[in-house]
Each structure stands twice: as C-alpha cells, then as structure tokens.
Figure 1 (cartoon, rainbow, N blue to C red):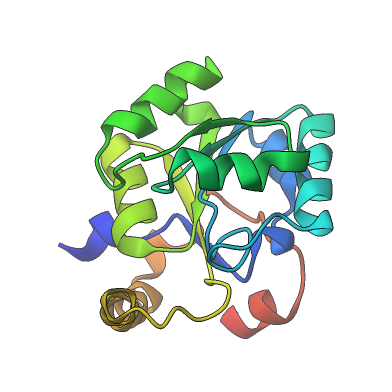
Figure 2 (figure 1 turned 45 degrees about the vertical axis):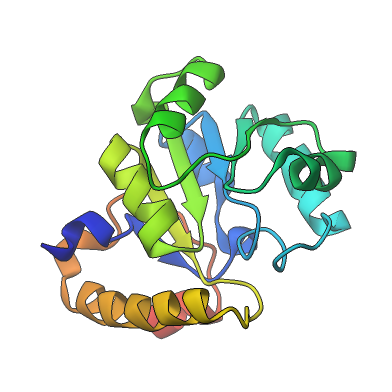
Amino acid sequence: MFKKFYPYEYVESVFSIDYDKLYHKGYRGIMFDIDNTLVPHGDDSTEDVENLFRTLQSLGFKTLLLTNNDEERVQRFLKNIDSLYICDAQKPATENYLKAVTMLNMKKEEIVFIGDQIFTDIYGANRSGIDNILVRFIGYNVETKIGIRRNLEKIVLKLYALNKSCQNRIGDIQKRGIFKDAME
C-alpha cells in the first residue's frame, strides 16, 4: 500500500549524489524540483547549484526543472542556469512528468527525478514510472499545510526504513558521508 510513496533512493542532498555513477548506470536526464530540493523555499539559485548544473551538463546529462511554481519564480531561479523547465506542473499529476520525458527526448528508464516531498515529487514520479531520489528538504516552511505533510512523511519514511527491498533500488549512487554512514 505504501510502496507507491517510497523513493528509489533517499539521500541527504543533491550534493551527496554521485552523478558519475548515475551516468554509468545509464541515466542521461535529471528532473529536479526547485524549492527545498535545490534551495530553500523561494530563494534564488546559489553558486553551488549553478555549478552543479554546469557539472551535470558537462557529464552529458540533460536537465529539466519540474515545479509547481509559476513562470516568474522559475525564470528568477534560472537566471544563471541553462535548463529546460515545466512550471505549474500540478505534481503529483502524471501529465507533466510524461511531458518532461518527451521534452528530454529520452526513455523513462534514462531519467531520474530528484525532489524533497513524498506526496508530490516521489508519488508523481512513481505513478509516471520514473526512477526517483528523495532528498532531505532544505530549511523549514511554516505553512500549516506543509507541516502536516512533513509529519505524515515521517511516518512513511519509518515504514520505508523497515522495508529493505524498497531501498537502494538504483544502487550505490551516494557519495560516502555522514548521511550514508548513518543509514548503514
């Protein structure tokens, strides 16, 4: 019942992923959520995020932002980043996940989605048949609606931690570090 909410991988941040390993596993496209995945909610991109996109593209990845944010927010974020995007995506609806696959001109099996929310990002990717990575969300959002979801996510993550067969479905794609060591 809960498997539809389980991520393929769960990592500390977008910076703890070994993208070389992802590439060698056959992935060629990466879809990202923006808020609380790449930067705190509403923030502009940072130099580290901009360097991440340049690195990914130099490795041969195509990137796409799939976000429920509006056009203005996405354009502000992309000021120094070259990437495809879909705004107002209505995640977890599958329509724009599948549109993103077409925009990237790839098979679903060549794409991974990276996001911070189980009930939008991960659930939508799973419903669309796209491998995915959950990252710990950045910062804290004081909105009550988000707070309730985050508490429900904790329950799902506890169940996920008990279900070893649903973990590490992509394989060893995490850089060594505090979070990975703590999960072992």
